[in-house]
Length: 88
Image: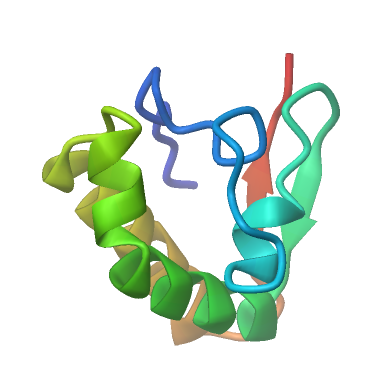
């Protein structure tokens, strides 16, 4: 099992992410747990790439974004995998 700790500033909901433009990022619960399946990870990859400017303005560095993309790609590589965000 691969594990990572999200960048301290990666909190799209608390940073005011546009839910219409980035619905998957907007669904990441900062207080509870969020589980994404392989389809949702595909959406998140696109949002992370498209939202690079928003994330950079929120103080999230590019390496942290690439690490999340890598984790999403691991989920998409085989069936029955999930990406779990553990909230506060």
